[in-house]
Length: 238
Image 1 (cartoon, rainbow, N blue to C red):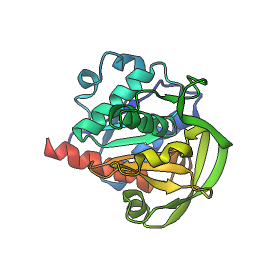
Image 2 (image 1 turned 90 degrees about the vertical axis):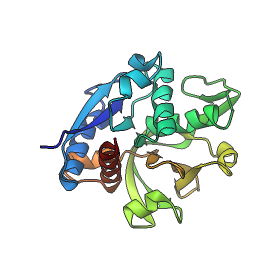
Image 3 (image 1 turned 180 degrees about the horizontal axis):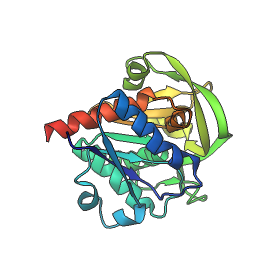
Image 4 (image 1 turned 180 degrees about the vertical axis):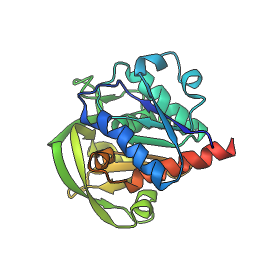
């Protein structure tokens, strides 16, 4: 029997967080769809403080999960950077989305003062800022931009998804990414960024919403299926 795919769940596990309960269920459903086995492992962010390579080198995919602020922001950013630089399949949801944007702004675009307002409310550059309308336990419609990977994965130009967030990608700073390889791939009705992806990466996608919630209803989500397929391909190329 083929070895199980190893998926690192980067975050600080808390059984009271709905998304943390949903993620293993969502992965199991996607594994059935892809006819593979998955061995998810929770990796606390403080374990990654000194660098992510040693802790994550054996994993086929990295998922930066919800529930920030993390015990170690630097640990979460290190995991995201590793996935970005090595081509490791990456999925970020909710807090993972926010930190994927932050990592790219700091380490690729050179905006070293880019900050998360939840951690640094007086930041000069609040790249991640309070949402104009908090989306805690709410559903919202999103539109996928033409030519993006996420649109291809969904096979549709729009969808409705579930959120649990009060912070997001500050649209004031979206133009900074306009000529970069990190593109906004989904927006809400106010054209605020709700998903990003890396055009040069085999699979690097992050969303403000929580697709893992589908697992609580026994439904396999196309985005998670896409992540699992990418991790499966990566595992066979090693």
